[in-house]
Image (cartoon, rainbow, N blue to C red):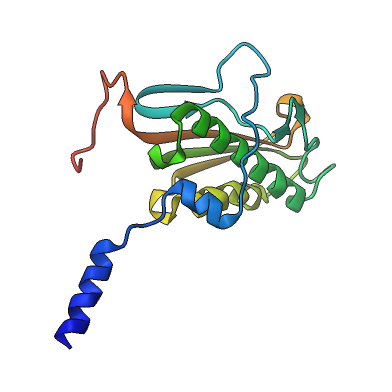
Length: 183
């Protein structure tokens, strides 16, 4: 029995959770080309150990793939597809900026704006598609706090726009960074 216990301990010590890049491969998920800005702004800004992404839309190339409002032109499933594509675009931008998604130590915040009509109340179901993808890639322990908004319209007529803030390892220009007491 002692040998068995020792083997279990060694296995636990040698166990390392898969990184985000490995999880993407295991999921069979290929990231799209990072979207280009649709105006005068940049897609990502890093200050210290925080990476802020501009509003991520469900686009392919330089055009919206989903157009319409949930509850009018689109149903909840189409909204979920749009949220997932916007999240994939966000991961592509983060990877381009960081070089690897393995540098993400936590997703701090996920803001999801959902264009809806009338009294639609399914915005959280739409937002869950983005949350689920991020959780699959980074793990439950890195899940963010989240805000979900129902809005009248979004850029390019898309049904979803994501705002994401990542905490990253090896932050650039770390002046003014406040660290939590647990670090």
